[in-house]
Image 1 (cartoon, rainbow, N blue to C red):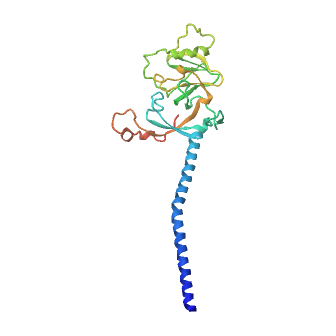
Image 2: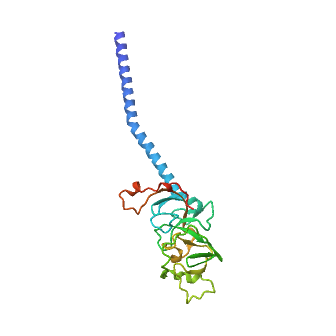
Image 3: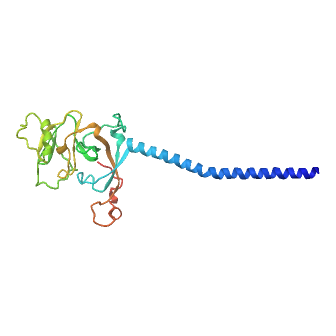
Length: 258
């Protein structure tokens, strides 16, 4: 009888142990998918936060959709702008984080124009605070010095129209210019004195650019970033099917914007 009872007890203990192992295995199998989902969720949250931080404070991408900066930038260029260089505003606040470098004449900058708040433009910084600038026959003068601008493109020199938006220039003319007779045109205007805290932007394609000649001066806070590098480019105006595959401009990949 003693041996029989001991055998029954060992059988019950073995059965109990087997049952516990089966239970633990079931719990681990249920815990496995939950653990994987948790890890993926955490990874996605971290990746999203990093993307938001980089896009808001460091780098941002843009696509060139107009020819106002030809030949420097072409329609279909994909551009990376360095936001950290010029500083950026913290979203939802008026607090601006300063950039690690100052902006200077000749920089190609991305900015919010005053005439369309939801639009981003890319132009070249021409007039700094305190500058006196003018244009005669399409030739730019800054502080009395004629400018040799090798990057400028002129496509329609025979047409030189005025525009009603140019009336803003009257408030910034030098004193020797008669305001009553002042009639600025695309290629002939000024001299204008740039006031403190304001900047004058021009497109490199001077005959096909809606820029500061028309909509006026920029405040410093409007700058979004300095154009840095092109990472992709294709002929967006092509009529061929799938131009982003068949009309790639390989030579513009990873070229610096100057």
